[in-house]
Length: 250
Image (cartoon, rainbow, N blue to C red; front, top):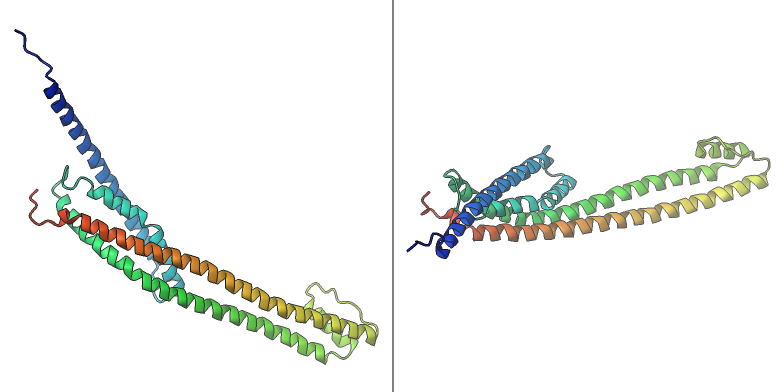
């Protein structure tokens, strides 16, 4: 009686062994990829903080945005590193996994603390924008007032021609022949000054409104991103309690 060489059960066991072997190899590659992503994220973080400009609201605000924008890379890296728990690990990875697990808790807390900092910097930048635009408007209105004063003092054709020559950098100064033409030029210049003052105020309002809208969109996006990132990091910390288990023996 011949012995059955290919038992279905034995074939299944062999297939499972081969599958487990290939799975462990794949998991090791995932771990390597995860470590690589974490290192690249660290390089990005260092680059953002050099040079440091603390107390500069614009730098702090943009740095917060840069950190939030780049957070998917370390999150994906951590998931890949923690994949498979202790399966297929080297001895040196055990303390590293514990460190990374606690680091996710720290990252979650820091991202949560970025929210009030982002809100404060949003208000500081808004105030800074208001001051900057107000200063620009005041300077331009002062220049306009100087032209108005000079216009009021121009009583002769020569004085009017000199005033017009200072306003036209290309030297296109019309010749004023009589008093009637003088009064007509003064009226046109007065209307031009009034229109210029109105345009300055309108442009300032539009500029301030545009800056406020851009600032608000970035603030909402980055603060919500920091909140979600905080939740995700803390979730990873809670899900990796096995990595902090002191009873594990390699």
